[in-house]
Length: 254
Image (cartoon, rainbow, N blue to C red; front, side, top):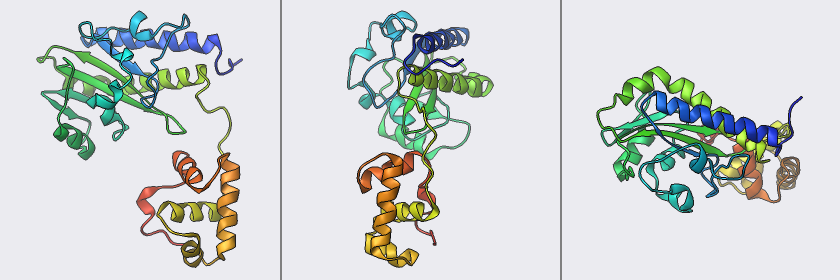
């Protein structure tokens, strides 16, 4: 029987996964571990006792208590990179790398990286439905560590571990999805896609060959299904659920 979101059972499961994360780091000579269950929130993940896992399970370099700095996620380059890269990546030699050439990581590197004492790291972003992004960082102060080899050998495993932790913690705290996503019709999706592209109701009506009031009807109906109020919220919610893909907006046809 599954525990309900917010239950102590799920929080115990998250704490056990946190211990796995810490143990994996020690085994790889990446002993410094930082975890965010939601990079959009300054609140650190906590254990069943209510204390931050950063104090009880993980440790970081020196005496820097990053989890007490509510603006840290806005300054940390590794966290910033997680906003643009959903796959695991690593840091060495002052640069970020992944399995393939990644323009987003190169752009973050070009902005300059304040590494906070980190010489090598593996970072695993964890994207959840609804737009929540978590992240796990395994780090070392050793510039000679073969982090590229570690990444090649264990990146997939570490990514899965990060996803398990972030998803379990989200469910434990009531932040995870608990219902099936809304079903939108083809017309509702079309209207929202064109609205996301900046088109007015009248322009959308001409593009998809329906009346302006009908466009409004579809957008309002989609908003109701998505449980939000207003056009902008409906666009955002539909995007986080994967109904609106940015790649096909310029060439979309009814």
